[in-house]
Length: 173
Figure 1 (cartoon, rainbow, N blue to C red):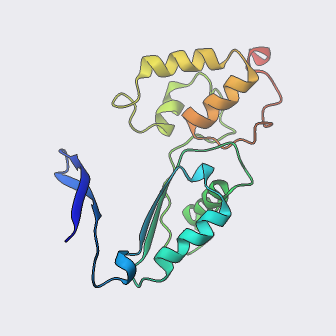
Figure 2 (figure 1 turned 135 degrees about the vertical axis):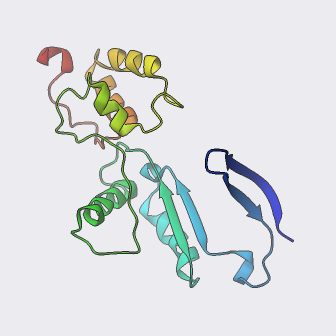
């Protein structure tokens, strides 16, 4: 018997996601072959190599990955993001790979001050993202190179290796 552990209900669409744990006699070892990975920017290649086997052994196996940008441009999450950008651009025709990115182009001007850019990277602006708190964070982030880098990565979804910024924001003003 499957046992419901919890669920998320979306009233607007009248839909829900439900976590179910239990033994399914029709699947090997009680696994259905689907894998949800959250925060792939901190997941390493070795772990994902092991986890991919879960979905690979099932005819309808699926891997869903979610993440913000991170600070490791040599890591697994960044590699997946790069591949996703290839699929999104049409340079890869892998129809099995769906990619959706909310973020700001790192070459965009006024990243630290343009609220319209911030909204592009944060589709829940005004709902789960408090605009006042966000503006305050941006103002604080302009006080140092390190904080600017964190803001761009965590709030604007721009990948960074921590050494990207060579010009201090206040020096540019």
